[in-house]
Length: 432
Image (cartoon, rainbow, N blue to C red; front, side, top):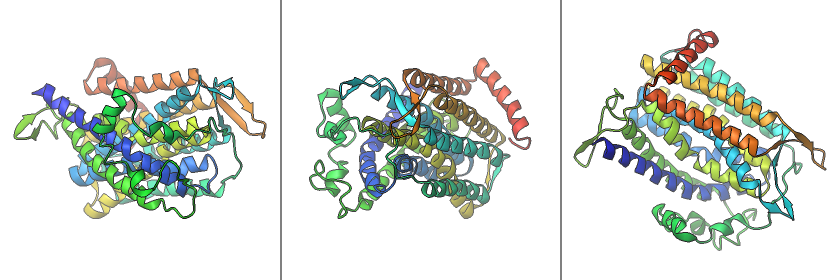
């Protein structure tokens, strides 16, 4: 019953994706209020990035404490690494393609202008964090201090962001005076109505529960408290992430997955793709948990906040790699002692981290290289158009294809894997 065994977890993953999508609306409204006094770029890289990256944190926490040891860490590293690549490639591309081609103030937008400072600050910080991740976590044992170092990296990044915060308006130019929420006032069309009801839209309309007359409420109003809405959204997403962890475990089950050869549901035995759980998490869990980042960045881009749109994507990656992985690792090892991984899982984890580092560097070069302009306010910007968007999409598709083919043990994929192992030995001789 492999076909049914694959369809069930895929359906569950889609459902959790929709739930996270609905709940992230509350995230956006609450985080905008909480970060109302931060400048453009800083808000996206801190408040927005943290709130929209909670799904990755919850997924890693739940995976470690439910599945235990190496299986939990496999899903955790797969989710955080896959989400980091999704955020770095798909989200900026989606923002660019959403904005480019639209007509604002009788002018057709042909590119998105992002502050060079934001690209350099967040891009280089992300590369540094990835490099430390590759060098730090090696071998088959993980200890509490691994998590401490990762958390310290994010605290340092967060502190630097706040210390260097500039209250200048930057390069953001509102693209439209329309309220983006007006587009979601009511579902339009058959597909929208279906998604609205399947994602429990009437029950998860959190804004109307916490904000009266939500379409006329200004989130900057001092009398409104955004924390209850943020915490409620986080709780709903935590529940969805628990389902997501189970779905990933089921989808990876089969003869190729030693730790989970099959799964039982309703008294029946099913088997999935037979892939390592880590590879399943890299593709499917990362996409589901990246929904808040995607929605938030696209809305920022539509309103002209290009710095925040890009800073949210890159800042979310730093949060994913440092805190969403570091905190669960620290908490679990404090409670249960060091995590001991199988040699195969440790090797897969090391290769995945190396791929993340290499593709992050490649993505940074795509961002940074190319035409630059200086805005009337004197801000130096890098332009990002369709060519860069398509390049980022191609990079991610190539990565996803490689992961799937490696899970299927295809010759060309295993050849690349062997090359990565040799490179990893040069970078980190004591690594897995």
